[in-house]
Image (cartoon, rainbow, N blue to C red; front, side, top):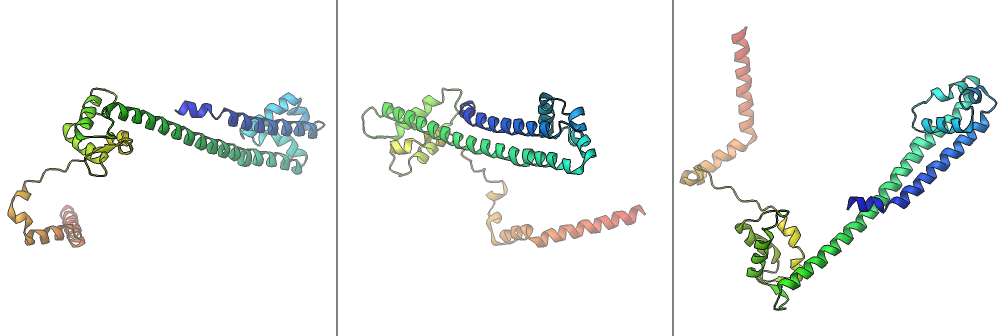
Length: 248
């Protein structure tokens, strides 16, 4: 899907490339004409092709400020041309290119998601119609579990345990009438992807009555409190002082 999204941005890429090329061509022509009869033109901008190349490199700031040192030696005002060029190219044009590409990519990606979601719903609707052989307009528990059993045969899909079958059916059956309608069936893909968290088994101590007594509850609250943390920190500090005294 990413390749399709990028392919849909070819028009945007061409527009941005044309804008950058026009900016580079115009700036190079202006630089060549302005500095033609100066040491800058005789040493650096010897031809329009060389000027175009040097200005392209300057767009990346790789040869900045070396490329305009001869012009700067003649007059400091000449540096304004190159400073404005770098500011427009690096801070304006580059940000404009990134903004246009990002907005176009986001828009194209959203369209692709809508298309994929539409295709997925159509496929699920066809699957629902195939399973609903009696044309009742809903699927019962046995039909859904049979479907999940068949889906378990495909390696590309996550394996679902028998316990999760019931949970998936309960998740699909939002109305609680033990019937899965076509609208509820449309969430099948998302429901299968859910990782159901199993509650951890009770600990060994929870089997004793004392664990559930009020005294034990107060003890657990005390251990979780800030006071207990401060006591531990105080004991550690005393231990640190004792170690320092013993070693000295």
